[in-house]
Length: 96
Image (cartoon, rainbow, N blue to C red; front, side, top):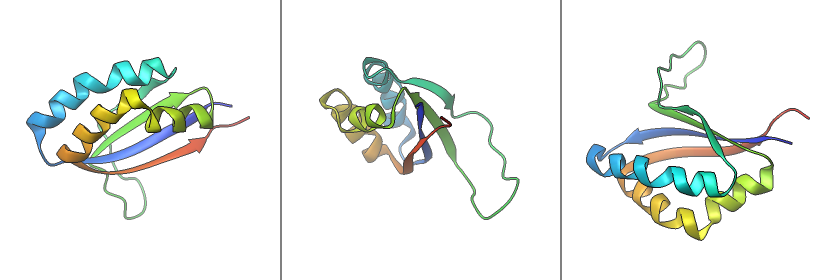
């Protein structure tokens, strides 16, 4: 079943984050993932959440998404992102 990584990112170092944007896609693709949303316009409709930059990735399975996040290929880009931003990230299963 398809699963989604949903991220809300507050960029703290825009120049470094630009490098992350270039470095991340190959690792996502190597694990069968694809970007569904990548920082487009977001607007709160209800609640208290005020997202900064929203990213949604789709993977074929929950385990595949977790494997990407923990992978050696993503370790470098992940460290870059973590040093250039503050993020909240979840993985969630889609509909069966």
